Length: 402
Image 1 (spheres, helix red, strand yellow):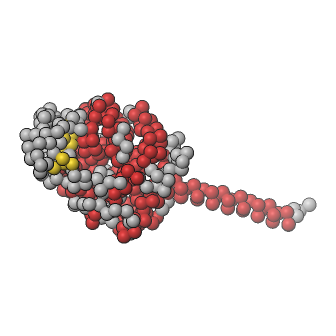
Image 2 (spheres, helix red, strand yellow):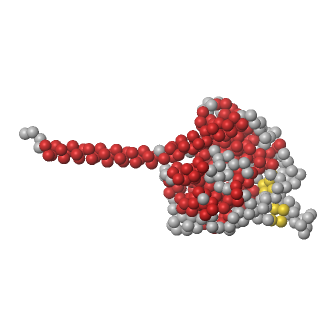
């Protein structure tokens, strides 16, 4: 007997419906998986001209390490990083005595040459690594290698893998754990190395020596009293300790430290620093609440970007009380899109210099499919020149972090 036309039509309809559902599911999964890739493409196109221009500048630069400048107030050697606390000033009542603190007010006479040298180094490696990602041109790797060798290997110019004399206070202390925050700019150096380490022209011995330097620095960060003190800091300093350790542990493939940092983010940083509404009360209580809130959020977002895995996705992690990184971005975003809405105190310095193209907008957009965050990022300054802004914006080359 010929098939029943009605049954045949129903069967065809059923097959078409299954195919339609299958196609829709596949499309949804593809869009979800490619979300970061799409954001990366837009970020790349936005920054392409700037990246190649900065890389062209970097190709002309000679290495300048901590040995190029020094301060008579440093108790270290020429190979030791030295800086002085930003907010410390001479005491008018005791000119020859220890400096006194003026929170939020930067003393322009303090020694910061080593900090500026590290920032310059970060700019060079970040630019060269970004250009290498764009072009696969080995000349960028060769130039980066000269700077890496000078900073981490050459006995005459290398920096010691410790921070004993950072953010010293004149006639008070020779260095402090709080000074560890000065090396956040080595993060883009470490990430740049990760992006270039498989290049055909990379020197394997040099690469091993560089990784050994970071391994030594990690050991100092996690065992010295200064490092332990900074790890326990309750505000952005504690966040930046985890961010740095995570970055350097990724370069050196230190799985124990990577796991330690994941746990610290989940059990200490997020639950103790973030309020129920997504704000950071300890940062809001500072004399520069806007800038510090941006800075701490950027740092927490970078922790998520560095440490998240398929098995342990920090982007989706929620504390029992409901704190999430998404809630932090959602709290701060309206004040970035329109700073006039800021209802807290204005910063005592650099109020007009923020915001710029904050990293939390890029990586938040990639992970939560928030196009408005990405569009706001596109509209902001991508190449700030204010020293204070650069100091508190260690991630300036987002394409090397995808």
